[in-house]
Amino acid sequence: MFIKLIVSKEKQSLPLKTVELNCFYPNKNGTVYTSLSLSVSNKDENVKNVSLPNCKYEILNETYTGSSLKKEELGQVFYHQWSCKSANNKDSYCMLVHNCIIFDGKGNQKEIIDDNGCSNDKNFIENLEYPSNLMVRQKSSLTKFKEKYLLTFRCQISLTFKEMNDKECEKPNCYT
Image (cartoon, rainbow, N blue to C red):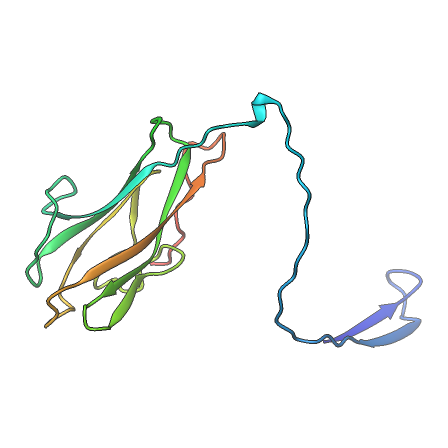
């Protein structure tokens, strides 16, 4: 890294002195450790029971309210739907579906949704829709996977606590 530093008496005056600094630092990969001591308060107000929502992933036939699809014909439209239901029916969480991969049963895989929750292949699936904080969906069709007899879909779901004053969760910012 190379930095040129100009020192002067006033903002508008000519420089009195010019100093060149060369900074060198090693480029090392390593693990950094630290320790932290915790003190536990006995106050009841600090203790909260948090129950995670139950989440499910469905592939549906015909519409988002259709029955679960087990077998599909090439070119048929179907619907991906991820949903979570909170045990206490409170809207306390935000959901993000990301890192979706298709496995073809023959050792091949293709990422269709990236780690930001955006589509990598809009011919297969568009960017995901978020109709509510705990529901994500999008329609799709299998036109690209000829001669594949078994496909497995795997996606990750991330749940985060919603900010206290926010009614809506932040959605992925995908460039279309």
